[in-house]
Each structure stands twice: as C-alpha cells, then as structure tokens.
Image 1 (cartoon, one colour):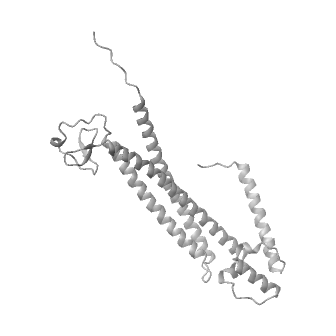
Image 2: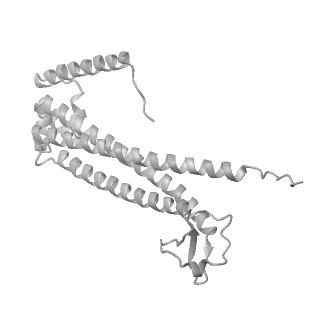
Image 3: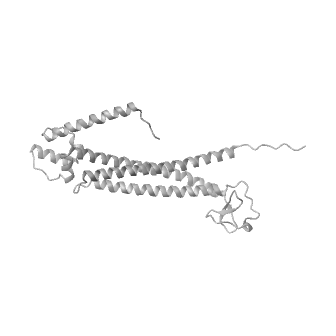
Length: 259
C-alpha cells in the first residue's frame, strides 16, 4: 500500500531534516573543540566511541580500537552523514526485499492450492496421465503434450476445468519463481554493498559511497517493478477465483417444457 504525503507534510519534514543537519553540525564542531555532546557515538561502534573519548580526555591510553573508518566518521561530518544515509538506505532496501519475498511466497501458495484443486478434477487417461480439455476442443496433459483424439474418444469432459485455466496457473507460478530469483539476486548485491560500507580497514571513499547509493536506488526501482508484477499476478488470480465462485454459485434455471 502506498501513501501520498501532502505538500504541507513534505515542507514540515524538510524543515525537520534541515534542523537535524544544523544540530549535527553544531555537535560536530563541539566535538572538535573538545566539548562532549554524547551524540557523535551514533556514527561509531561502542568500543570505538569509548576509545575516542578516552583519547580526548587523556584519562587512559588509547586501546588502538579506532579503525580507518572510525577515524573518517569522527573527522569528516559530511562523510559521516553520507555513510549513515547509505547504511540506512541499504537496510530499508533489504527490508523491502524481505517484504517482497513474503508477498511472492503468499501468492505462490495461493496458486499452488488452486493448482492442486484443478489437478484433482483432471481426467485420468488410460495410460495414467492427467489431462484437461482446451477451449479449442483439444486435450492436453498437464505437461503440455497434445493427446490423440483416439485416446480421448468417449471421455466425458463436462464439469471439468479447462486446460487454459491450469496453464495460466503454471505460467504464473513460473513467473513468480523467476521474480523471486531476481529478488534474491538483488538481496545478495545489497549484502555485498553493506559489506563494502562496513569495511573498517578499507573505508569507501565519498565517490564510492555516492556510486553505491545510486546503485541502491536502482535496485529499489527494480524491486518496485517486481512488486508491481507480483501484484498483477495476484490480482488476475483473485479476479479469476471470484469469477469461478460466481459461476459455481449461480442456481440452475429450470427450462419450461415445450407445449
């Protein structure tokens, strides 16, 4: 479900973001001047923050736990903000992947249940294969093989699901499998990006972080596209199920005898 914010809401959010940026700048300047604010630790690990604080106050020797990444985060506020934003966007994208995969699993389960129901109503041929009759009057096995008319002669197909209904489920299930594989690929790449961002010994440069941010935005765009396709499949399935329910619930109308 998507939400559309009003212009007033966006304006307020922008003001709050600018206020937070100004506060961060003041905190950073205070830190550099030796005045503790207690807020710089959000950019560092717990051990790294304790080590940096001890080194500033001179109360104890530095334990050497500050990494190259920690030093950058402490001494470059712009870098710290950029790095933090990239991390947060990565986590948001990973959460989107998880939600998307949950949706795919849910829809696949619905299709699988319906497919099993159709298979229970399929005709069993003399050779043991299951088959459906198509709208064109040709019979096909569940594997898509055309059945010879001589084999289907004398079989009553009335009340049986049509082959097209079963084929639609098979094709949509295959599409969902492919979409799920794509989402897993994006998840893997997001994990690789996160590892790069969290590399303490070889921290990413600002240009690298900007590049990774753009890549993450592209991944989110792809995820939105996958989500749209999943929703189309589910909507089509729900519409077909509704039509089937309507058809099956319609009472039979008695024909008037001819006089």
